[in-house]
Length: 397
Image 1 (tube, one colour):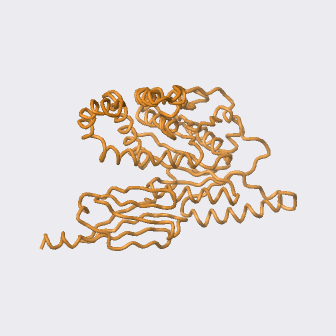
Image 2: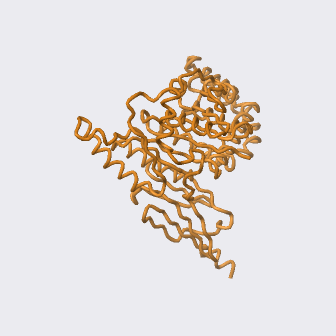
Image 3: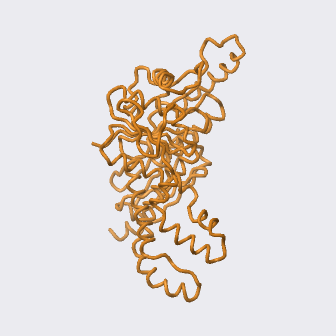
C-alpha cells in the first residue's frame, strides 16, 4: 500500500518547517510510522525538533523519523558521470577546473536530486506517512515542474539520439575539438529522467497532497495565491492552507490590536479566496515554536479535531470530457486573470502559460485530429473546447 504523502511549502519565514514537524509528530502519536523529510537547503528541521537529524533517516520519537537531505550527496549519487564529462569539456575550453565543476550542475539541480529521496521512501514500504518540508515556494514550484518536463523529454527527445551520438562523436572531435558524452553519461541522464517521470506519478497520486503555509500578512498571502494558481496549473492537489501566527483576541486594545485588525482582513480574504480548500489556523504563540512541547501545542492548534493524515480536500483541478465529436478540457486556475493566460495546441500537446509558468499538457491520442474550437476563462476556470479538424471530418465522410 502506497504511503500517504504530504508536502508543505510556503514563503520563507512563515513557519513551514514547524508546521511540517508538528503534523508529523501528531500523526506519529496517532499510531502511524512517519518520516519527516527536509529538502529545504536551509535545513532548520533539526533546530525545530531540537535534536540531531542526519542525512539518513534518524529516529527522533516513537514511530517518528527525520531526515535532512544533503543535496551534495544526492548530486554525487546521480550526476557524477555528467558532471565529469561537462566539467572536462569546459576545462578543455580554458575554464578553471573548480569553476567548470560548479557550472556542470544545472540550476536547481541540488533541489532536484533531493526530490529523489521522496521517491525512495515512497517505494520502500517502511512508512505509513511521508511528510516533506519543502524549500520556499519559488524553489518548490520550479522543483515540481521538473517531473512534467522530464516526461516530455523522455517522450520527445531521448531514444533515437543514441544512434545520432554514436555517429557524431568522431565528427565532433575532428571538427569541433569537443568530445561528446559517452554511453555511461547518456545512461545516467536517462536514469535521472525516468526517475523524475516516476516522481510525476507519485506527486499526482490521490494519496499525495500539498499544503500551503502562510501568515495573515498581505504580501505573504499574495504569494500563497500565486503559488496556489501554479499548483493547479501543474495538476497538484492542495488539500489545506495553514495560516500561522494569527494574533489572538487578547491583543485588542494593545499595541498589537491594529495589527490584529489587518490580519483579520487578510484571514477573511484567505477563507473566501481559497475555499472550498480548508483553511486551518494557528495562533501567534508567546514562545518560539521549537522542541516537542511547543510542536505539540502547534499541532493541537492547527488540526484540533482534524486528522492531519487525512486528505482534507480532493477536488480535481483538471478534467477532460469527451461527448460525441466534442471534447472539453477544464483547468481550475484560481486567482489568475484572463490577461495572464495564453495557450496553443501543437499536435497532441496543449501549451498553457499562466504568468511566468508554462505547462505542456499531453492530450489523449483520440484528440490528435481535433483542433481548439474556443477558449474561455470565467470564475477561475479555463475551459478549452475541441472539435474535429475540417480535414478529419472530410476524410471521414
